[in-house]
Length: 437
Ligand code: DOR
Image 1: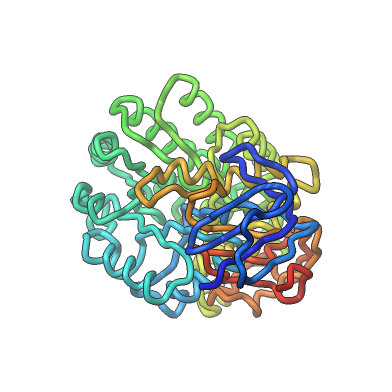
Image 2 (image 1 turned 60 degrees about the vertical axis):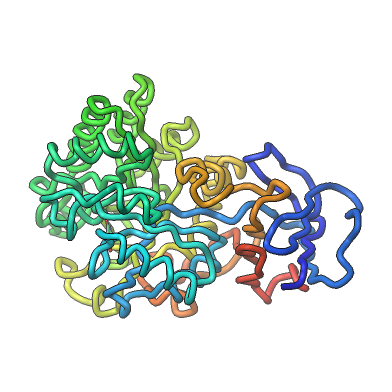
């Protein structure tokens, strides 16, 4: 691997509090130098990326992705998902265990890790199930999964419905120092629901899912986290009430972290009118008022990270009756562009956006996989190069992901990832831009 020079970009590294024009040298998989002005001892033979007018930041970290392998390779594989992630500026993804078989034992975790090594282009960190086979009846052997390298536990797609099991899981999470990532949904209340409960669901004649279906479980989980001292992580928070509950819990010292998706930050239930099943997702797209609460939650530190919930599906899964269609949005390749809409609209700062996708998720992962989410000299070289002003039109057919299911197909976005370096290797380069070589 030749050394890589990234010249004269705007380096934004929230982990080090850096926002300045400078250059970066990548050698032997590490960041060997970062600074302003002339590079001391520039390597003789190297590749050069010209980053004038571009942003250079740590590679994004996404703690909530569905890679679908093993078992659902028609929807996605580790090979295609990691390439999609690279195109989205991500250099680390956490993969959810709702595969077939589910990731509920060390052998399946090893399978994902070794497939990621052989087929993947970026780092994949497995998340283990909370319960065996995701059936909600018996806890997995959490200590064994922790030893196998999981970064958290989740039955995502389903909540841990049994409060007693959730209590036990949180107790162990405390001792293992790993989060229980709960998909908060009261299934009795959401049953048969297709989209957000409100005016649009009434108009379309689709059964709705009220905000309360999420908030009831968020409130229960927070009570159990308080009781146990365990570490609760709220997956894909989508409602005003969830933000308020997490705010209060944090204030009273409960150990809770929370994530929000790009789609819940930028799209409302109204998209279902236009995009039909491609806007069907769980939790559902909510209202403008919920978006405002989620954005404020991010800005105030109530919501810790942004995670895509990348959920690729086949055409057949989506091109069917609304009630039969699978839920989920293929999100890795549009995340940065869609979120930049919030930055251009003055709703969040660029630094907040980058920090919620780099240093903040790195803090949740901890040091198990080395120091992530920073451009500090000596760190592994995971870097994203971004053009904040480049306008482009989303064409799902060109996605590296097998999942073409996005309500953003055909939308114009302002802000694009133009290059991604993972562990020192250039894994994505948008050759239509000026970043060049
Ligand atoms: O929309 C969703 N799709 N929400 C989930 O929680 C699961 C995911 C999937 O696996 O397709």
